[in-house]
Length: 143
Image (cartoon, rainbow, N blue to C red; front, top):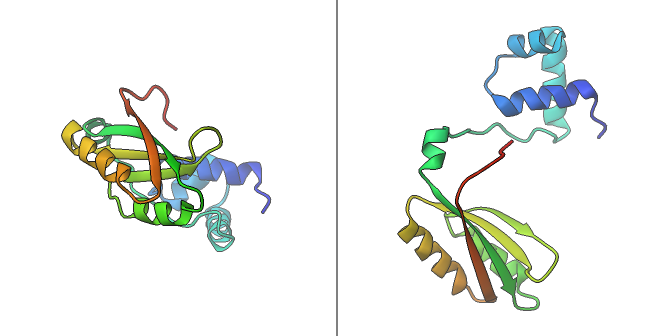
C-alpha cells in the first residue's frame, strides 16, 4: 500500500497518543474530521493499523530491568524455539538476525533476580544451543 505524507503524519500523531480524538487529529493535520476518519478507516481496512495499544509511563518502564538475549539455535529448531520463547512471559520482542546468532530476544522483569530466572528458562529450551545476555543500563533514544 502506498502511504501519503499525510498518512505518515497521522500515524506519527497516533504513535504519540493513540487516544487522540479525531477532531484534534484533524486540527493538527489541517484536514476535516471526516477526511481523517476516512483515512483511519482505510488504514485499518488495509492492515496498516492493526490495533491501538498501551504506552507505559516512564516511571513504570524505568522500574523494569531489560536485557537483550542473543540466541544460537540448533539446525531446523527455529519454529520449536520460537514457540517456546512465545510462552516465556518476559519476552517482549523476538527478532531473527544475521550473523553469529540466530535470534535476539528482548526481555523485561521487575528485578535482576527474576530477569536471571527468565534467562535461565530461555537457556534450557530444547533447541537453544547458546545464549549471550546484555542487560540494558539505560535508553538513550526511544521512538
